[in-house]
Length: 82
Image (cartoon, rainbow, N blue to C red; front, top):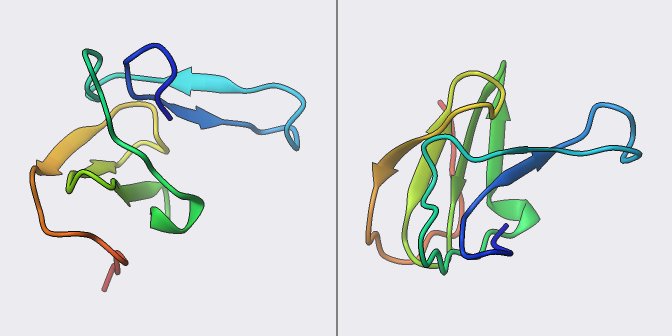
């Protein structure tokens, strides 16, 4: 999600009543990434998502911090954990 130019992931644990933002490791300046719901993959606390700008990010702590796996990939249509 980009609102103020920085990318963040929002998480809820109460059915959407409250949300917490996580930004650590994600671009915070002039981010133009768009992430769609179907661009997410989740497996035992490991979460990955691809963006419309060809970036791939991964978190191994339920989304609290992120690492860039790759930049400028061709369009991403799915992510699969094997």
